[in-house]
Amino acid sequence: MTDSIIIMAAGASSRMKQPSFENELSKEQIESANSKSKVLIEFGRESKPFISYLILNIINSGFKNIYIVSSEDASFFRNNFNDILKMDLNNCNIYFSVQYLPINRKKPLGTADAVFQTMEQFPILKYQSFCVCNGDNLYSVNSLKEIKSTLSKNAFIAYDKQGLKFSKERISSFAIAKIDNKNFLIDIIEKPDKQMVNKSKDSLGKIRVSMNLFKFDGEICYTFFKNCRVNNTRNEKEIPDVLKKMIVDNKKNIKALLMNDDVLDLTSKNDIIGLHKYLS
Image (cartoon, rainbow, N blue to C red; front, side, top):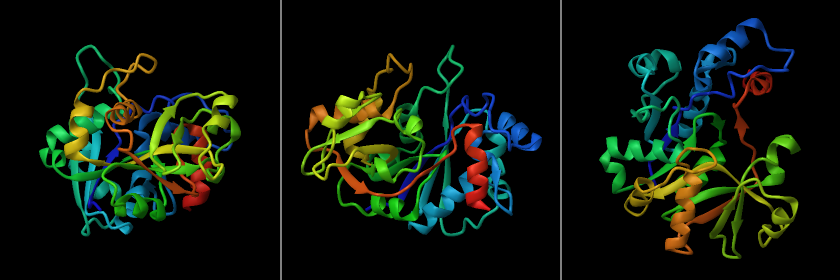
């Protein structure tokens, strides 16, 4: 079990800034999407930022220590987060890490770098367990409780592909988690073809997808995050590459927690209308 979770919220939101074919968006919604970090786009009757709904589910799952990875230019958010989040934060501790950009780079260096920089800025995480999640996904309380309460030192939520309510086109772009008959991670396959997908079904005949909801043991994972190399395809340091290195080191190091659940996603403008309907 763990009481700590890292929310990765320092992304450049580049896909959110792209034009949308969603005709229902108002001028105000488009301006908000183009000008704000996507986790701060507001939803619901109380106009709360998206990340507030995620934090609420995290608190309701029992987490006490919440580390939010922020960008270098997010000082206003860090200094005024109580007013911006519009929620009761008395039952948790909020900490901010900053994902600093390397010289000559305009975008963050990736999810693995976000975790590594947070561990460097909060060294206690090097010696204890913690969870990690995306800032632009809204995970259910059930999923968050599952990852929080597992006794496995390193784990991830392995979602049943059929339980995720994304379009077929979108879900086909997700990486597939290949697991053995004891639910340990064997491999993560990015952009798999149909033949590879069929070969990657688990013992229940299900296709498993990772939505970046993890648990790590700090003492075990720190060196892997520190030594993570830049992915040649993405030009970033990514958590799946950390997982692959951990698997090579110990074939049964990462437990897959099987879930049939949905995850709400805020990646592009096309997601805004659906989230407004759900969160209103």
